[in-house]
Amino acid sequence: MQTFIFIMDIMGVIVFAASGALVASRKEMDLVGFGLMASLTGVGGGTLRDLLLDRPVFWISDPLPVWICLGIATLIFFSAHIIQRRYVVLLWADAIGIALYGVMGAELARQSGAGPLVAIVMGMMTASFGGLIRDVICNETPLILGKEVYATAAALAAAVHIGLCSFGVPFEISVFSGIGAGFLLRAAGIAKGLALPTYKARPGRDY
Image 1 (cartoon, rainbow, N blue to C red):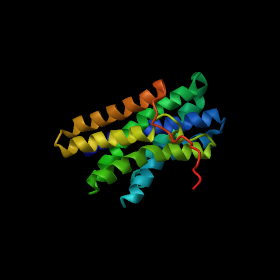
Image 2: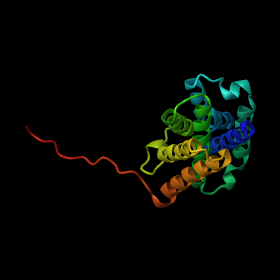
Image 3: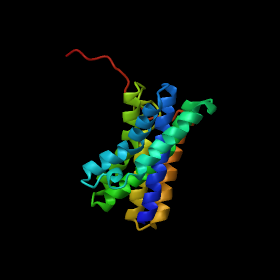
Image 4: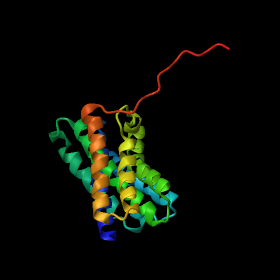
């Protein structure tokens, strides 16, 4: 199980680092900027998760994720010009990342003894915080504040995984079900503009 979680962690780091580096390319940053944005996006959510759960911060105990972020940043620095529609690639890379990290964050919280609700919240925070840092620093409208479903997809991925685990479903099935559910919901947001109802302003009453 731990090996499986490690693989998911690395996959999440890769796609989120790529999304951070793609934003750096849109902002025409230098190589240091690429490395910074890839690293912040790749490990930001996991760092928050580990700090809140009082766990050893994963990239401090093993710096491999940081090396991966720097490697992805360097690769995209020299190849981003090949990608014609970088924002579209960013959206889909981010969609994969929030599905992976939503499940993984929830699972690590569950292993740390957190209850179902806390585990789901941790999954959502793990999946969304790195992208939030990326967008704020780059002066972009955070995807989490967009109209399309975003954090909801991460929460769904975490909830499906935690729910299936509570019913004794095999671990691998619950993991892939959670990832699939989260990705499909976010994909519907990207492709179809699926969004939650928003607040509609109404005139106040005089009493």
